[in-house]
Image 1 (cartoon, helix red, strand yellow):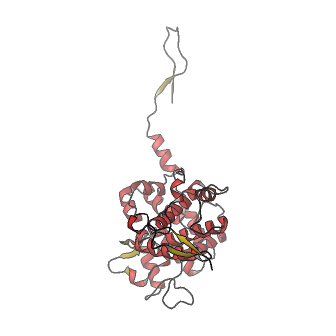
Image 2 (spheres, rainbow, N blue to C red):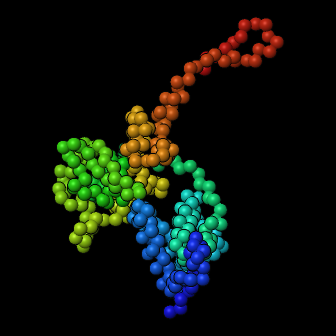
Image 3 (cartoon, rainbow, N blue to C red):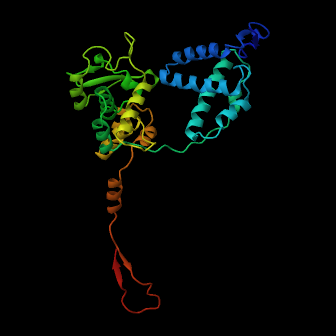
Length: 320
């Protein structure tokens, strides 16, 4: 198997000409992606983020047909700029590539960073895409199995992401205190109030171990992708065809309905475990009812029916 010599770490001039890393031309991607995954775990990034970046980089490897040390800025621009992907996805791909090639440069695999030449991607501000109460009811009552119904309830009443739903453990719930513990983005551990519906649900769920154990794995739980697939199937069974509604829309509904009920947005920010209030605002839509009520707070006023130019008579007004 041919080996590719990779230049020394640029941050240490004393090593110029020495200590070259050798990466197999055939399995070079596997090796560096494994190292990159270890690096991301050391940063505390979630398994979901690591898997998503791995998928993006595997697609890059397949499409460009080059080893990781031979990828060019042109290869990256073609990948990010290909047709049929949204601006949000372009931004995600760009972020994954910048993170990966910055790691290769810092860790001495490459002296250059082709991702540094990628142009900035402008993506429109996200809009909330919540399920309605009727749609949630349709999913629960549309033939979904018991565990799928539980996933839908946790997604809506606790506002959990699919990765958090997948990891619910019996020990996470304190029924006496009325709390539930979860691990969010960046391995952040948070404890939230337990909604009464989920407290009642706990009576029918395992009192020990994972609520959603993986088949064939003694101590494991299912992946977030499995939660996504099951809730998506429940959505289809309910006859919901809107492509913009996803399992994550349960989290949007959680936030939007609280706004509708007058909950302060800072409280919602804490319940969603968002570090930025601007992120929370993406999740919290304003209902048509509240918009209508807002418009109607503006008082009516008298408006002349005619211009009355050159007229000495009394003005005729119309009440609007």
